[in-house]
Image (tube, rainbow, N blue to C red; front, side):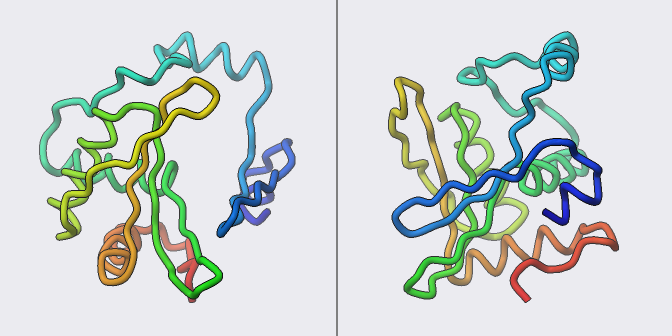
Amino acid sequence: QDIKEYFNIPYKVCKQVNETTTVYFIRFADTDFVNSIERLGFSQDRTHLKVPAMHIECAQSFIHGFLKGKGSYFHETNGTRGYKVIYRSKKFINEIANLLSHFCGVKIHNPHCRFIKNRLSCGIKYVGKEYDLINEFIYSMACPWITRLNQ
């Protein structure tokens, strides 16, 4: 809700409750907005997406921005806190796992993939000390107006 208000986003915050987690999200449904993004080269089919080749400093900024935009924190009922990233491309999520290992010092996780509504969905999940390392990385490069989510 704070993000919606800060950026003056005109869409509602949606809630999805799973067995152990609750996820909040904002779905952008404006046809003109979606079409303008597609004209820039982004498409709905992300199954063949790969991380572009870039200098190490750019890769660090890329993974930082990707985590903040696509990653999510979770807190399970048993007290486990963690961080996860879900994406439709297994190759892409493997590349993300490699970058996270490089920049955060976590082990390279193999993604857990499954089909949801006939579409591949792959995720990597970090808990415990690895969650702390990911969190440290995200907030070491944070903008001043962002506060830690888990404090």
